[in-house]
Amino acid sequence: MATLRIPIHENDHSQGPGDAPVTLVEYGDYQCPYCGAAYPVVQRLQRRFGDELRFVFRNFPLAEHHPEAVSAAITAEFGAAHARFWEVHDALYESQEELGGPLYDAIVTGLGLDAPELHEAIEAEEYAEKIRDDFNGGVRSGVNGTPAFFVNGVRYDGRPDFESLEETLARALGAAKSGRSGASRR
Amino acid sequence: MSAEILSAGSVAPEFTLASTPSDHVSLGDFRGRPVVLAFYPADWSPVCGDQMSLYSQILPTFREYDAAVLGISVDGVWCHQAFADARRVRFPLLADFEPKGEVARRYGAYDREQGVAQRALFVIDGDGAVAWSYLSPSGVNPGADGILDALDALRARR
Image (cartoon, rainbow over all chains, first blue to last red; front, side, top):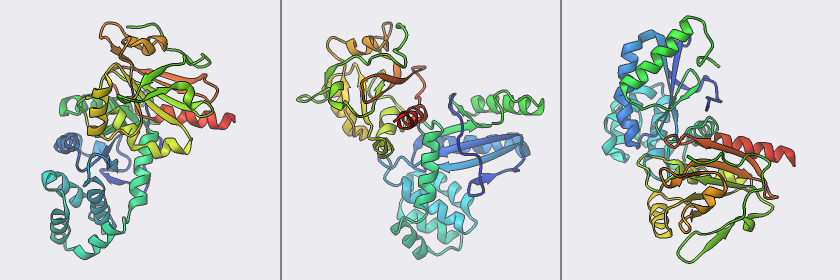
């Protein structure tokens, strides 16, 4: 059973309370269509579970297949450096078919950030270390493609649709609430 | 289903299989280095970052262990070539094609019902012995965590 080897840390991008009983971690690639399909699913799960769910996004760009994956990830990390990670993350998935320089510019400019500064970051592969650390930690945890989800530290091997994920999260929530360690926290 | 896959401590059966229409690869070519042997059911599985492309993407990590990576399925060389080009797989994909599945059978990793290799992983040490093996449900890409743990263990042994 593949388990999350890198505990949630302060450089992670996280939504929801730090002490939520259920943590969903996604290893994702901005150019992966399956991640694009999972994006609204995660949002629906967040609405469904509210404060009982913490969501963490980590980078897993499959750069060999997706030529825009790394630049998109850098754009999101650039947003993070300005405390706007989730706005950029959401905008990238909402315009996934248009990934590329003009979209990145439009996104950061729309947030009042400096596009030339972003160009320099992409050129210099800034944030590459953070992205690579996410990737390598994912490989060590058994990430086997994208999106890869971990529910309270255990890799989720089911289908990435709402019903299947909801069922697993509900089970993890039940286990956490009844204090069983079972497949919950590690 | 098949018999059990070969377990740690077994001698890894030698084989020579075609890797391209004109080249062959033998297990013995890699004596002295760890070998990652990844049997898988078929080229062209319909997911992003399928198992072989994932391993290709993390080749730099495997290289840190001086490990060779070999994929094996019952697909033929031309199919492998098209698949490797399309998915940018940059390590040899071997054709266990004739007699079909013979090498997979010897490793206990042949699914007779489906007529394909199972999703079985082997890490073979530099002396040609199985150091670690793992059989994944055929629908589940096992990822690389187990392989890297096994390579770590091999390195610690030296």
